[in-house]
Length: 265
Image (cartoon, rainbow, N blue to C red; front, side, top):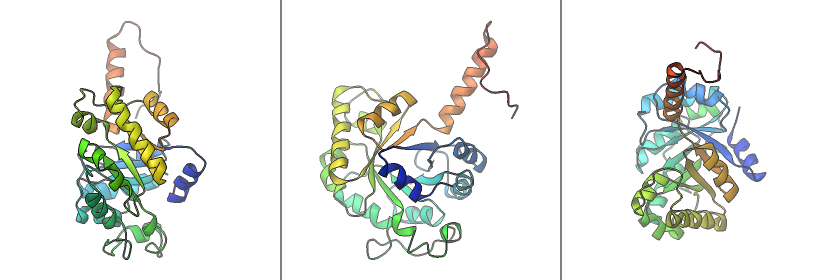
């Protein structure tokens, strides 16, 4: 079973953590994703169709499937961040962090006193990870601030300077939108690429993990080669759509595509 120690060993070796992404509610889909072999699987409560009740069962399924459960919070709101950690998420990705003050509020919600103001009540986390959770796992949970706006880029040094921040996760769709680019995934527009490189450089200077949300394995390999250490590739919904569309195309073609799997279910 993967743990935070597993992730730190991957990073210490110079490799990247590969992250799966769940937007579809339900434990079964989350377990399928985890068993596919991702190091981590993130449950998306921001743009995914997942609510808190769904997330609890999905964390259980991800842990059962052998991956580290993470969550993208719906917003930078301390209550839901703390509840997701209490439910067993071992890290939080927080959307739309635009200033040092906003980042400090986010990180504080992830850390117990005196490092932060997270309220003690690891309802599921303690039985899932051990009685000493608040001394062992709790202080180590991952806190990734999303940089995805021009405002965040202007405040990048202040964001990256917040004590207790684990890393910065780039959201390419909103970043491209904010910078006036028509692209939403796997950016190639030069000024957007330059902004992404700046985030990577600041992360390296500060000893932070640099994360990126990729739309394809090819782009993910490219970003790892650039130095990103935490990469997401697609999502469960994207994989389902692509697989279903490929099967329909094969059935409507005179020359069926090669069989990818012989499983019925």
